[in-house]
Length: 467
Ligand code: CTP
Image 1 (cartoon, rainbow, N blue to C red):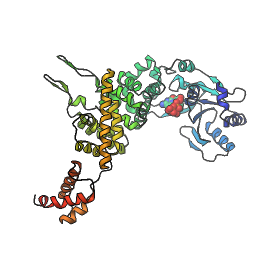
Image 2: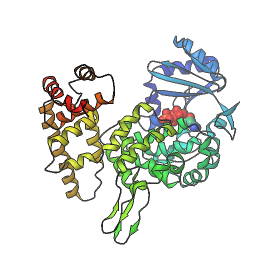
Image 3: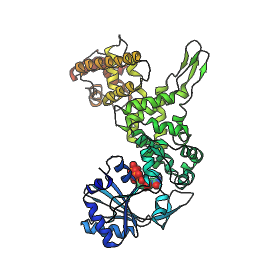
Image 4: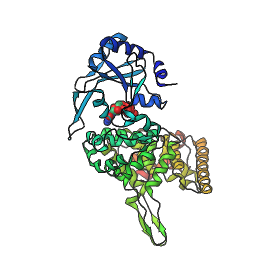
């Protein structure tokens, strides 16, 4: 199917052509929609470029379609409205000159080429004429089609100009590379490296948004490695950048934690689209550099990296302006990521499994997905042995769960009961007694039910009250 046939499938576009003719303007579809149409990727946002007054055309066209909700941004000269599941955005062709201190462009009316050449990448400069007579004609000013076919991200002008205009485009280049699995022009890599400090004028939210899009890609390591190779990672996520490097002492060297992390993230991307689980994979070893120690006769150790890593998360979340309601989940996965392997030992007790079920709670399945993704050995024998270990842990978890119904564990005897039986006011003692009852359940001394827990409370209360 050629471009014009694909466009004819979108019925309202014939009305766009008519509206353009009636109002005497030339209208193009530009940017991501054209790119994705050529790549057969579905999207429902269409950007229209109008040679003339974009705002007037948008309201004329909206009224023709019977749409009365239209949002206009006069300062940016843009308007948009929704129609039949599509998000339609209109802009008049403009020249943009940027202020070096912010990414907000100041806007002047411009020609088609003025507008197109200030766009980020050649693959985003493709435009389709939708005026009558030329409907479906592709306008390719910067060889965007060639670059699309050759799967390469290039800028229409020198990348120094394109990135200096808007440094967020450094992130966008790597994000498109990861999303589309394209290569990136060498000149972009050089400019990204040299201009990386300019990212400091970009709001953290927009940087983080692009970073999370990289993590959401099918193969996130493409973007992560580009960020690292151009030293941009040092600016946007220094803790991840610090993971790189191998140290050798005597016969011992440890693996490069950054490369290992890239593999873990790619592995997990095959099992889940949950970007927070992918984020957990990215940061699971984040404290390895800080806990690294060389022990004579043993080699490199990273004791406590899981706990320290979990504690680093709050600061990272604040700095990256990540949504705080995901913090606890990430902390938990980082903190527990070594537990399942410790539980794979044959002689593990039910009590240890119960404690694991309670600590992981509803995130147990995600934790196991992370642990499986963490296996990056190149030796297939080892991989299958480790995977079997996790299968064994999960089997034990199911057995114990079946017996105890623990997943939503909560002590069957609540604080109020403890207070009234022991004649206590709210105090740390109440918590101590509650923990003792929970421990007894987890250790299998009593069952997970009210009667046994209550009986146990009566039994231990004097001992605790006299302490
Ligand atoms: N654009 C740009 N520089 C930016 C952002 C956008 O030049 N920093 C241009 C590009 O031509 C882009 C178009 O504006 O194609 C629309 O922007 P946007 O919707 O953000 O990007 P898309 O390419 O449509 O892709 P996505 O929706 O995945 O971000």
